[in-house]
Amino acid sequence: MGDQVTVNETISDGIAVDDLHHASHSYSERARRNLWLQMSRMGSYSETNEVPIMVRGEGTWVYDANGTRYFDGLSGLFTNALGHGRTDIAAAAAEQISEMAFFPLWTYAHPKAIELAEKVASLAPGDLNRVFFTTGGGEAVESAWKLARQYHRIRGDTDRYKVISRDVAYHGTTMGALTITSLDSYRTQFEPLVPGAVKVPPTNFYRATEHADDLAAFGLWAAEQIEEAILREGPETVAAVFLEPVQNAGGCFTPPPGYWQKVREICDRYGVILVSDEVICAFGRIGTWFGGQKYDYIPDIITVAKGITSGYAPLGAMIVSDRLAEPFQHDESFMHGFTWAGHPVSCAIALKSIEIMENEHVLENVRANEEYFHQSLLALKDIPIVGDVRGTGYFWGIELVKDQKTKETWAGADAEKLLRGYVSPEIFRRGLICRSDDRGDPVVQLAPPLISTREHIDLMVGILREVFTGAAKLS
Image (cartoon, rainbow, N blue to C red; front, side):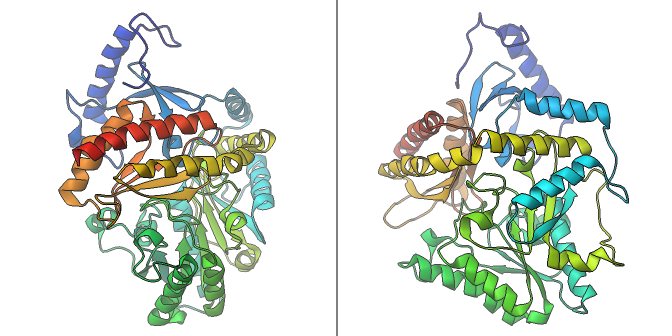
């Protein structure tokens, strides 16, 4: 099971493994009693199926309360870009705590927020020079929709409130962000949601029903669906379009050639604000600071979180173009904010994280290994249940199918049996943490820390080969 220490070994705090097993069981019982896990089926945990308790991290590895070591193949949740246990980041946090632990950005400012805003603006494409901090990605998305609506209102376009996003996409769970999210399983329990959500097809070329033999033509078709939606709804009613550079939910849908350029052209034509939701993709996940630098486009707003602090503290941000920010630099206030936004300690950590990424050439590491990662995953297609491999940088999805030739998928009870009955537990048992997801067709996702090496890639792919081969025999 993973990389289990022996009964005579101890972990860093000197507790014997026998004691660790007892501690793990105790923690699991206490978690079931009081801790409400997020996005989790609490009923699936019991005396025999305990809550996994992670107690420490070191580099690209995490350890549970039993002493078992796992490779963090999802970077926590697309977040731990620099791995775990960085004492230099801890020192930056401690220094800021001793100097000033907290002060809000309501009316006042503090140095670390100013320095971080300045740094982020210097990295962002085009004229995206204004940084509005939040505490996470959902809040950043919520902020972007509110800003888009108020911006149009200030300009007299009081009917512009609608938002266009792609099918299957995830953009957060606050009521506004959930409206932009397109996953029914996340939405239906909370309806009615905020009015104005309009959905268009994602860039899933593997499942294309139009131009299935021509990637560029498919990309133009997918972009034109946005224009059709704007015209159908009435351009005077559409405030913004929200898109990820690489769509996460559904399994790492990359943009076809020309897609982003066409979308930019369409938004300009109809006066619609283009929001690039980069909560996952920014800060090196796809090998560049931001998606526009990878795919050659400049949005009006970028939303970020996760990798901005490498997971060492909560922080998000909305990065806004000078054009959109201009009306708010005079007498108009953006009546929106969060107590913890731009927390001094989080900002200090983000500055140190960005400094490390620059000094240690972390983005260059991602770019250098990107094609090796891709080719290693493509080699899995000799296993009959591996249908598609897609992604970029350190952000990859492997779609599983019943039949490679027909692309027949698993659904319902079959998908449940495949993913939760076999694939997920077997991957975890072998010491790898990644994502097995059925938001759309069944997909396994890998997004390791950006410091991961080719040896780490080999480790992850080797485990997936074992598990997929076993799953193929069962299917």
